[in-house]
Image 1: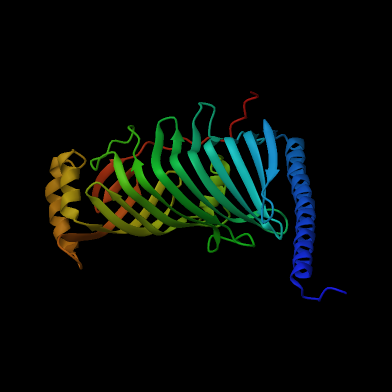
Image 2: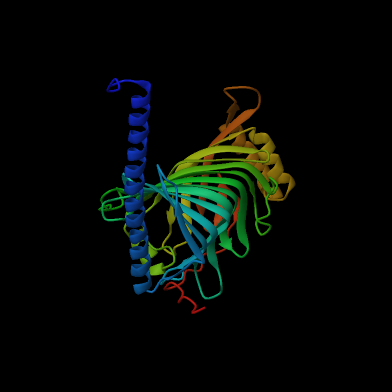
Length: 357
């Protein structure tokens, strides 16, 4: 007697066979995809080394079946021909087999990237104890947009002007086609930082802790290599500017929102103009006065000017100061009063020659 088509035993065997078949097919597909992924990474490494990059790691493993392919690299070191140096103790690079243009990365223990600026060991530094990143690549393998989340971060100009933050979130994107002139966007950047510690080399009347910094900016025109004076000068002469759609910070008694533009003067020193709104401005101005950032002979003039620009806050108590803030002649000005003085930017003629360590 033949068993019924849908007898429990027959159904169980058919289901088990189907599951095993799908598992084997899935594992085969994943294994082929993982092998392809490994070849892609190996090709990138080989091409980089042929172009003078230093790329090394202590160990590599691949896992993530069934939905993802994860490559874990231990003690990864990457340095390009310009001396830009990246290192992390451990990094997972993650892809989904049917979405090869999207990459995710997780950093563990420590990660840092340094960009040398001159022969005196000044460099741009970005480091974190942990974090994650996402990048989208176009058909040619070039990134179009990326997002970065970092914890316990250091960022700034090493060695003396390093900001520390508990958390840093940044998103960056560039257009599909390069900008034709300064009227078109070359780069979009949006970011925020939490619990920022200001470097000791930048004494402030608002203290050394800032709960929140946030900015949304657009670099207009083709983005130059900021390490090379001639390229920055050419961008500047083509009316290149940085457009700040938003720049806000909460720093001690200072609570400010602003927007404006920044660029360079003929000597490639920063200049810019912002329209700012400062909440509880009387406390911020008092902190500036008490700490000597506003000279005594300027206090009367500033107090008179504030009465013209200050109005009651729309919500809650306190006052809101709406006034122009300018950056020019090596200083930061609230209206007509210089508040800070900046050191002059000393531009290298060419990027520094990488060391042969």
